[in-house]
Amino acid sequence: MRRFIMSIPRATELVLRATKEAQGGEIFIFKMPVMRIKDLAEVMIEEFAPKYGYKPEDIKTKIIGIRPGEKISEELMTKEECKIIDETDDMFKVHSLVNLFGTSSEKIITNCNKKLKYDLENERLLDKPEIKRILTESKIFK
Image (cartoon, rainbow, N blue to C red; front, side):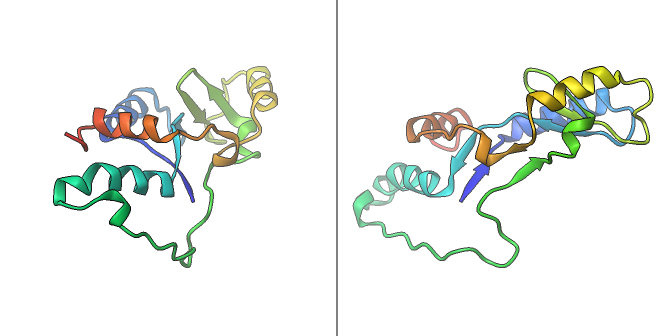
């Protein structure tokens, strides 16, 4: 399984920016890194096993499959929503159809041609050193 990830400070930043920029009904989506759950588990085992007196290779994992309601991949913005977005370097803003008046339709059509949807399949996966760096920067690893 693959997942987008966001730190708590980054989530807080998203809430504050959305509060500042919202005109009503928009959806704000930060561009986020993507990782495989398996890679995250392996990085955490490598980091925490020695701290608890275990060798990482002694920790066994079991793939249990998909539970009801889970997805292998997530989609944060659909092909249909791309028709009503603005894109910045770090974020997508999906406009509310109710409040679309005043937004340049030419800009919206241009954005739609750039990106058909925002999902895990189209994003680069983090490697294990990058995952470890993010966890370290987030103070999960000390």
